[in-house]
Length: 323
Image 1 (cartoon, rainbow, N blue to C red):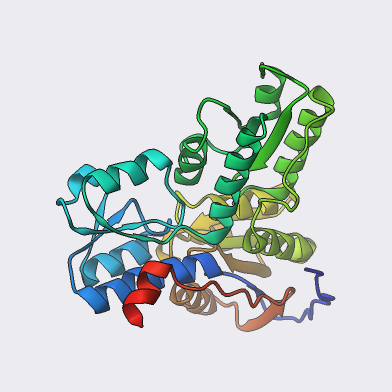
Image 2 (cartoon, helix red, strand yellow):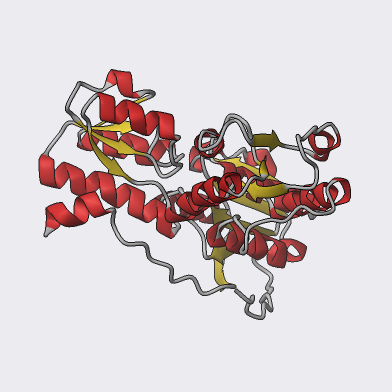
C-alpha cells in the first residue's frame, strides 16, 4: 500500500507522534475473537495450544476468562476442545489432535496458512524449500513441519553461504510472515547469488501488517529522537520494529507496557514516536501516551500513513456453531 504524504507539525512543546496503523492486525483480531467466541459458545474451559498471540496482556486476559493455555496437546484431556494459535501448527500436531479425538478450532492466521500451502506445493513439484525465519518461532516450527525432509531454514546470509542442497537448480524460498523487510531482502539477494534459478512465491510472504508498521517507522524516523514500540519480548514483528528504528539511527526500545519505560530514555528528547506490534492491545498504547504526557510531552499528533482495512472471516468450525 502506498504511504500517505507525511509533513510533521513541529512546535515548541515536547511532542508525541502516534503512528497509525499500529497494534492488532486482522489475524490477531481473528485469533482473539476465536477464543472469546468459543468461551461464549461452549463455556470454559477451552484449551489453547501455545499463546494464541504473542502478547502477555492478551494471554492473561483470556486466561482470566477461562482459557487454559498449554504447551502441547498431551496436556489436553481426551475429547476436549482445543484451539490452535495464530502461528499455525505442523501436520504432526494435527495428527495428535485427531488421535486424542479433540474438538479442534483452528485460529491459524490465513497469511500463515498461505505459506504452509506454498511449502506443500513446492515440495510436490520437486523443489527444495529454503525458509527464511527464526528457528524457535512457533510459526517457523509449524511451516518446517509441513515438509521437513525438503525444507532448509536460514536465519542469516552466513546460513545461506553454508547451505548445501540436493539439487541447486530446483530451489524455492519462503519467509516467516513477521520478518524485517530489509533483512529479508538481503538474505533473498544472497540466495539468488548462490542459486540463480531460485524463485519465491507469487506474492511476498511478509504480511501486510508487518510491512505497514515497518514502513511507518521508516517514514517518521528522521523526525523523532526516540521510538517506543509496545509489544512483548517474544513478538517477532514487534522486535523487528525496534530494529527498523535503530537501523535509522533512532534510539528505539521495546516496552511491554508503560512500566517498562526508563526515565533516562526521555532525557533530552523532544519528539517521541509511538507504535505497537501487531499483537499489542490499544489500551497499552493509550496508557503509554498518558505516561508520556505526565512527563511533559503535552502535544499529540496521530500520523496515519497507510489505510488498513483487512478483515478475515472466522474459522469454519465456529461459523457452523454460530449458525
